[in-house]
Length: 90
Image (tube, rainbow, N blue to C red):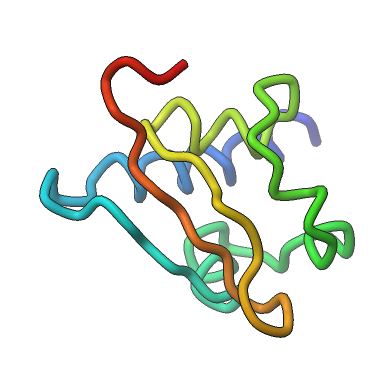
């Protein structure tokens, strides 16, 4: 089970890493995430705290490793904004 959970977040990291270098901002809907992950997001993803840039969390490591950070949820909480990190960001 743990292996499968981490695989879905590797898919997210790969998707983000493949974005052209001139794309510095990205807004994704929950259905877009779920299409990439191959399953629904956990219920906790409906809360802004799930989208924190926390390297201790497996899902957060996916976007951080790919060079992106979240700026938070947008609107009614069905979209998340990402910004590409600069080379010096940790």
